[in-house]
Length: 145
Image 1 (cartoon, rainbow, N blue to C red):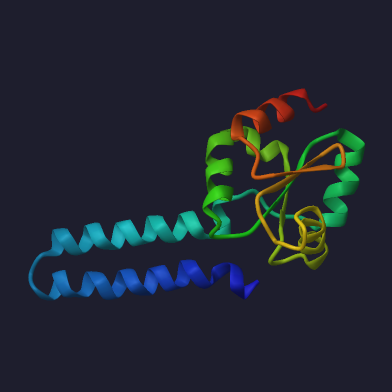
Image 2: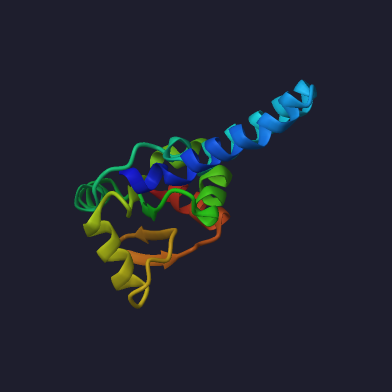
C-alpha cells in the first residue's frame, strides 16, 4: 500500500520545494503554476486515476462469469496511465488488479511475462496480453457481456 503512494507524495514534496523559491522571490504566479503542475503530476501517478482495484483471484472469478477483461497494473506506470486515459469511461467496465497490493496478481503477471512484472498485462478469456493497444482493449470491452 505504501509503495503505491511513494511517487505521488515525493512529487508533492518536490513541488512544494520548487514553488518555495518563486514565492520567496515575490513571483506568486510562477509559484502557483509550479504547485499546480506538481499536484497534477502527483494525481496522475497516484492510484486515484484508476478504478478501485480488487484481488486477482476475485477479478478472475468475476471475469469468468461475465467475460470482462482483467487488467494488471501498478501506480506510476506510464503505459498503464495511457491505457486508463485512452479507455475513458469504459475503463470502469474492466477489473483492475494493482500488482503492488496483490501478490497473487504479481505472480500471474510474472507467469505471463517470463518472470517479469511487465504491466499493463490484460487477461481476456484467460489469455494474457502484455501492453495491448488501447483501441484493441476498447473493442474487447465492447464485445464482453
